[in-house]
Image 1: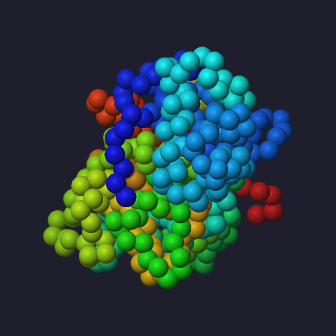
Image 2 (image 1 turned 90 degrees about the horizontal axis):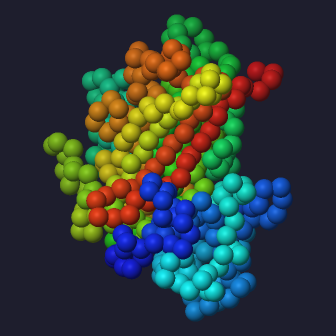
Image 3 (image 1 turned 60 degrees about the horizontal axis):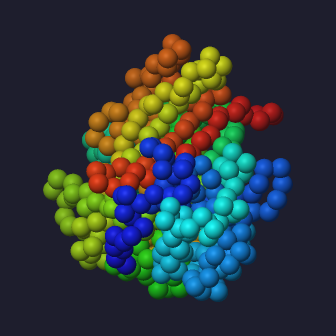
Length: 441
């Protein structure tokens, strides 16, 4: 599916809501990401769109009749308690709704027609998971990350032979996906630090974050019917920020022969706002070049549109604040900054490969890119790489050092697209604070 630039992307477009026009705003009128919220202190979940420092209640808009003309099914989806019904409407409906919301929020709309009564301040809402996530698949799409980690554990063969031929992934745990702001309990597991000694069980000593870009499936596919790469993006509802927390010492002991298990199934945090591919149209980029000496992808993983603009130029930034930094009023310290444009495999290729065996995807299924890293040390998207397995610790402003995460540490992931000639759009934040392991371990 090819998306094109239209009136909703105009860089000079302004909203009658002043906060949406402020420099650096994540949610200008050119963005309008979708999410699910409830009013603090009680209330049912409702579907909303972010605009400036407010949430536009789409159910309220539907009840007031300002969404007329976009179709009854779409209006009913705006009254739902999750994004699932909206996802099932398909890409043409998503585009139509975004266009109508843009029209309702433009400063050219007469004051009497503005849905001011449907706005709720961001600081008065609790944001929830956007949909019922039935399945979650985590990929390994950053070749820089794969090379770095491979060189630590397999210096003679950093990249496995299959890496440049297909997107590598594993099935994650959907039940432990949590919205931004949820505390992360330090997990316990088996670890074996000394190869000559038996393993021990206890709280991980090597807790890590992984900065990732996620994609949520909108329309699924029938069981046994693969999705061609040329159609893959038509099945993606939107993108979000992901932190796939990892216990590196547990992972090292358990990952052979079947891969990640308890080291990753304890928690995955996602940001609440789904940024649509329509909003991202001005920020598409060619897919990353093939690795030196690598062949071109097999035919089912190759398409002209994917080659020319299958990538997306999203800047991903990670910041850390220890409990001591917070107590002393210090701002979070930026640890790394990379871009999703460096991913070796595109989101379309990930989805096409995922379904190539007939696997059926369903609305709300989440796929994630895996750790997004770039070629320089400051582009590394996890502490395993950033501190090189702890050999190069990070110095915090308080004098504390971090090889891996300590209790009380807060990890904040931010994402945005910014390109000359276009309005900057953001993904919000993906936050989590590490809390001690439970009793009885």
